[in-house]
Length: 423
Image (cartoon, one colour):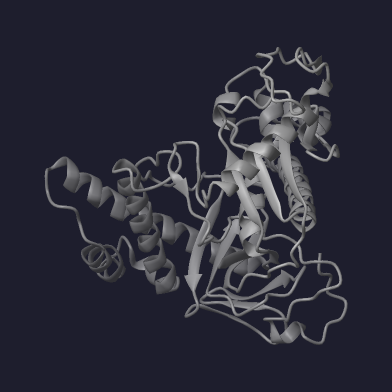
């Protein structure tokens, strides 16, 4: 399986200029190739092949006066930008024909230098890990990195990213074998909510941290300061960076919370069942800010890939399953209830239920039924099966290692460093 490990990078001034040039060249190649394909489609011509685009927009473009600066960056960056465009088109065509699971993918769009996220991707031919702990990137130099943990194996590719707050990251894709945990006899059903982030079927609760709500006061002040600045001025650029950094802190705290909670749940249970929530629909209601602040989709995604990584069972219960209407004690369906009703008494057996705990128990029972019926593949939001055999690398950093266990270092220069923290 593939995992992605994310590390903070600290380029110097010259390296930042080289990275900015690489970001720009990759963006230009993407836009030029995309324009050729769109124009060919509008003219009724055949789909332009990648080999032809590589010859026209990379090899020959370097010899022209208008695109001579493409030779200043690594050719791997330019070729990988074209491959990424091919992947974007493949995802679009597969989604159009129903061969791709999940939400429908749109047609590739042009990139802008004003995008909040700039990135380049390199394969093993254009980067290497040095003995001193730095990462060599072709035509950029040795980048200093903060190794929060050791790589379990040699990486196959790296993505250098600059976010909206001006931070740089190195994201390595590593092929590893599943780290199967000892088998347990416990399983859990989860009911995700807003008052409590998650309620487990054993009655335990995970409080909702509400990171965005807690940061709103400072965000409002920073946003007011930004609105007063003159557009195009340096002071406005500084104020925008402050707002972006505050948002980045909120996102980092939320991601860290998701990783810790999902890892603990996977370690403590052999099987985990969750309800397949319509997050995109809830994100268009009056609860939108709270729903996005909770980050349910990211959390469920972490549960799913960590279950595969550690040999656990994971299943989604259909969103139409009436988990809040059925009595978990006798099975009597008592009908729908408004959201403000947090406790109710079963009209059949008289059991007093906590709404969230009762729903998590029903999710547990339904999840057991799904697994017992042999449904190794559970339906996703579109009704298509979700396979658990192959897990692609996540866009964010993979989960933490187990306490008391270390992973062999994939970075020679860090093997002798005992102070490296493994979270």
